[in-house]
Length: 516
Ligand code: XMP
Image 1 (cartoon, rainbow, N blue to C red):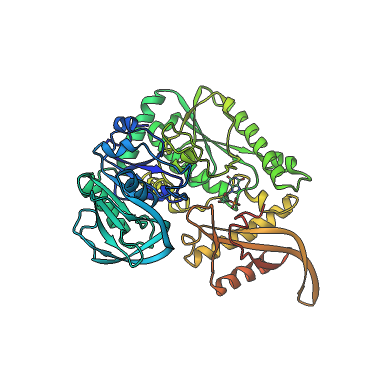
Image 2 (cartoon, helix red, strand yellow):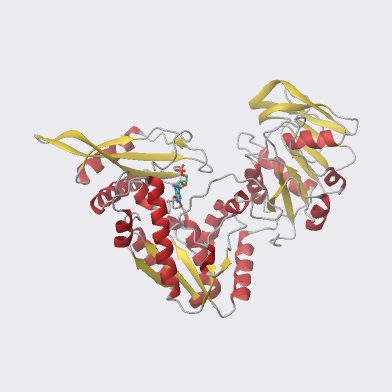
């Protein structure tokens, strides 16, 4: 593990959907936090010398055969431990408590009463709302423990070991439904673990820039730009670190949004003065997709064409030794790519921007310790404009997977215009940040309409707007009807060939965010 900060807290991941959220909440306290496998040995933990350990929740029951466990020796290291939900049950069980199935599984809000003065719940109201999500609970603890809080159905909602700095919470402090959750986690890192909270993104940027300079020396780095926030932040960071030794490549596949390529070109040539190579490959990509309607086949062909364009351009940049990529911490942990990191592969990655390993570059991944929200903050610090920093995610294959059916130039033009209207109106309504992704989809369907006195038979555009924390699940946005009306009217009036607009009211799952 890289030494990003000498003061850090480790989250043991027992397979909780919340492990990443816990890590982010700790970082919000300006304490560096990483996620590790639950199997990491106590000896390794001693070597890593964290200030505190947090044991996450899990989908399992502690008494189920095969339930994930941790090395019991970690409780003997003298390092403060906070067990959350399953993590609490595990800690209590390891130290002499008993855990049973709760009489009623408890999900949702509960009122929690603080029973005893203690560092973890210090400064909080005696009664507070918390979020429960468990089937088991600790029913009795040995005399070594003291209950710190209770709810009406859970007599031990918070617990502390009498002799060791080991705490447990049956509820989830990391979710926003526990309003004092951040204060509880702050108490844990500041009071219990005595962290000073010095980890700052500003220091991270300065340190990373130094590291890049040392590593690159006088050699050249190539960075692929997509217009998205991650690659833009990487390029901005490198531009500050090594200036003219950076060459960026933007492959314009013809599937970008309206004015997107121009926006990127302007930012990285006028503002950052980067050596930017734009590969105009619209015709090549269109030819590759001729007659193709299958979404996976579209992705495969686009991926293939992208690699050809990128590698071809990279060859024209003499002396390039390094390739910079915008890999983020969730990508690293989700692919199980760290020796101490969790082994689970949560997400199926379908990033067609991926490059083959045989390109013969050394990789530079300066964002691999950061979460998305931290990347955004870093982007601002580096001077990137708001519209790049807050840009919604956009799939590598771009408009090609939003043009359902065959992709041809006129259909792309129709889609691009409709899509621009969706974004313009959402921005004008002040909802761009609230919504996680908003776009138009051109359907391979014509419908009958009437314009003036004439009957029309034209295309249908679907509008998709979703809200999500992590893009693994998503809900459709309840946009105001007036806004939907403006979007619809404008598309039908301004985009030739479209006479009908529909709004997509499907959640993920079972639908996906993209239509293809
Ligand atoms: P789905 O449609 O799977 O999308 O719910 C989840 C997120 O991934 C994005 N997405 C892609 N990104 N290449 C990408 O780089 C792709 O092929 C691709 N397909 C979907 C999608 O926009 C959403 O943010």
